[in-house]
Length: 60
Image (cartoon, rainbow, N blue to C red; front, side):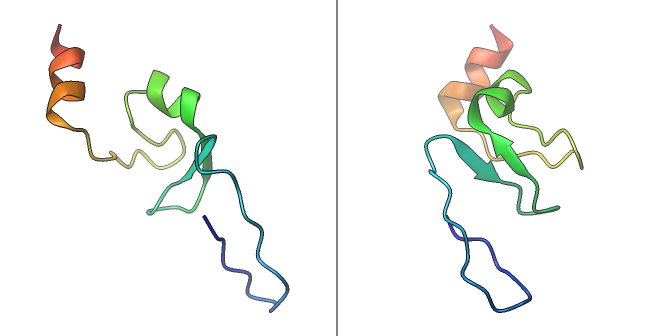
């Protein structure tokens, strides 16, 4: 996952199995924390997509 840098320097890569970037606010979110928060960004409240099985698990 690459982050844009407005100053033209090299972009940093983060391991995708550990971090997810919020498409709404750009915040880097730790995947375990994102899972605990039911796939909702803590900073801006963006709801990430949930698959059918994950959504059913939330109801159970």
